[in-house]
Each structure stands twice: as structure tokens, then as C-alpha cells.
Length: 256
Image 1 (cartoon, rainbow, N blue to C red):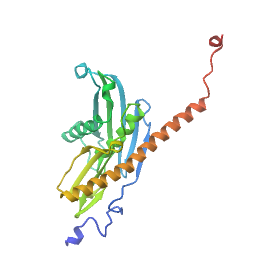
Image 2: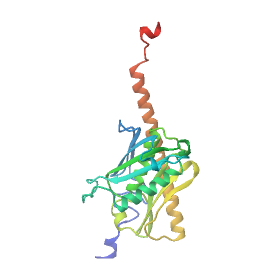
Image 3: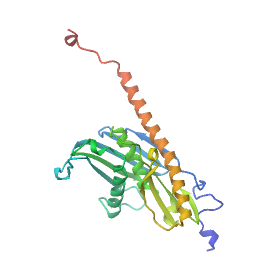
């Protein structure tokens, strides 16, 4: 097979037809799980995540309680049906690692000191995987936490840049993830212009790293807009539902 046939990117077009700096279609919705304090559905192309947030509430087991700040629990998992090959249920080294780095990203934005001895829990499930699952999970979790009313300095937005066929690309997906040279997911806090998470699988020169980082931040800003829009739509929906019920009428006994 010739070198040309091995290439993933041909004529600056990727396998799915996107330009090098183009995101996959993004959809986001808040308030999708009625029994959670906050929840969200987030999709980047065919990578789909759902998140539920609970708390602040009493933390159990009590030995985890911190007298000066809340404890944040973040659990990332992939549904058994999320990939072509069935994912084994239960925690793995990969899911444990992603849970921990994602938790640390949110530690920098949540006002944990406001809730001593309490616990805040986030559960993320990947329903469908086509690369960048930790990014989709973080984006869903951020919306879910805001939907739950957990105070934060800003939403956390996440996407990945990468290197394929020697070219820097935005929002790694499909064979770009499995066959590309570099995958670099980040989590970004727009208001602070701060990186909350950065991981890299592969090697980049300094100039390539700077290009990839700026491209990933650009993608995060697009995601941030979708997150904000999802929360606004949620509040409009709730306000509409309240308005339909009409004003609460006092009983005759209360009036008397």
C-alpha cells in the first residue's frame, strides 16, 4: 500500500469531511434526569455523555468529611454498549484515572469552602463513544453542576486537539484518535483564561504545542456557548412550566 493511501487527512479534509479547525456538531441540554439535583446530556458528534449532580448534602462515609470544605466525588463510566466491543462493567484503571483528573479540574472552580463537611457528587455515563469521551463527560458534568445550583466561578469546557498526518486538528474523533500521532484533551475556564486539565498522548514540538493549545481553547469557547445556551433554555422551560400552573392561591382558612 502506498503512503498516499495510508493518509487519514487528504487535501486538508478529514475522514468525516471537517476542516482541520472544525468541531463536530454539538448538542447540549440541561435538566434531563428528574431525580437528580442537576443533570445534563451533551453530545459531540457521535460521542454522547449524560451527567447527574447531587448535593451539597451530608457526606458518607463520615471519615471523608473535611471540616473546612466540601468533598467532590466524580465518577466516570462507560456504558457496556457505548462501543462496538462491549465494555466490561465496573471500574477500570482508565475510568479511575479519568474520574480523578476530571475531579481535580472541577476542584478549581467550585466554592467548596462554602460547604464544610458536605459532599458534592457527580456521576458521568458515556452512552456512545467516538473519542474525546472525557471531554464530553466534563462538559456534561459542568452543565449538571450549574443546573444543581452548585456555586462555581465559571463553567468548565473541554475538548481535544491532536496531530494527524503531521497536521494539528481540533476535536479528535474516530480513526484520528486510533491512528493519529497525538491526542491532547484540555479543560478550560474561560472567565479566568485558565487551563484546569491538560493531558497529552504523543509528542509535539513547542510550536506545535502552542498551536494545538490555542486551537483547543477555541473549541472550548464554542462549547462554552452551547453550555450557557443549554442552561438558559432550561431556566426558560422551568419558568414556562411555573407560569402554566398559575399563581398559588391561598385557602379560605389562610385568608381568614
